[in-house]
Amino acid sequence: MRRYGKHTDEDDIRSRPNRRGNRPRTSIRPKHEDAAEGMVLTVDRGRLTCLVEDRAVVAMKARELGRKAAVVGDRVALVGDLSGAKDTLARIVRIEERASLLRRTADDDDPYERVVVANADQLAIVTALADPEPRPRLIDRCLVAAFDGGLDPLLVLTKSDLAPPDQLLELYGALDIPYVVTSREELDNGDAADRVREHLDGKITAFVGHSGVGKTTLVNALVPEKRQRSTGRVNAVTGRGRHTTTSALALPLAGAEGWVVDTPGVRSFGLAHIDPSRVIHAFPDLEPGTVDCPRACSHDEPDCALDAWVAEGRADPARLYSLRRLLATRERREGD
Image (cartoon, rainbow, N blue to C red):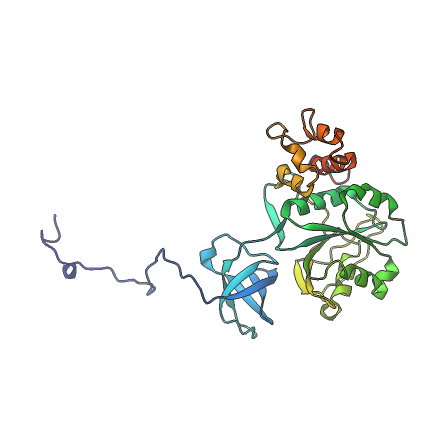
């Protein structure tokens, strides 16, 4: 049965009241053109501490961002209370385009990738020469992640008073990676921090390394006025260190321009997310030789054009060996 007549008017139609008292949903979202710019310093249980001008502002992600998460190093746009006062909360309404992205997975079979830091210029791979023993496979994996994410690598070798660095440096000599070698004494008296600082000036540098290598000790020396990290000893039974850093934290570099991002100690660095075709970009002397490679070439197969490229003297054979070693590291476990 028809409820209204043939010629109805809007005034005749009864509308349902909004019992929740809120406004109806709309697909139109505000542009937040007046939002302030900030940088994410750390993330803790859904709360993000951001640097806005010279203030630390606590914020949360706006609902309109959906599942898109902000990470340490992200450039973000914020609205709301930006005073930085206690118990205030701002809102992140936009995450700007990222210049670089360091990612890892728990292992090579894990499809879920974890973003470690965004917009970093450099990845400092901290490795002890002894106690605990160096793990070249882990270094290789960190290098692959750096090349894939657009970061320049830096090797920081600690505890040179316990073992010489020559053998490890020879392994990476063909990659022309800058490095710093330090001793335990230099870590304690600050000399190591001074030498490492020269490579960090004007850059955002993420520090990675497995537990017990002295990473947090070094970071504390680089930002002495903001020491917020505890340090741990190496387990005498397992030869592994204790995790003393539980979340990534960006800190301003003391005595120079730049930022240091301390990250949790890692025992594995999965590469399930890595596209091998991007790693070749870090080898500009080899990349032109891939033009004649077969489609989807792994660069480690009989028909790979890089063999002829190197045989013609266009690149150092050691560089091709290093590339293939890095590309193969995804198939090798870190303890192999």
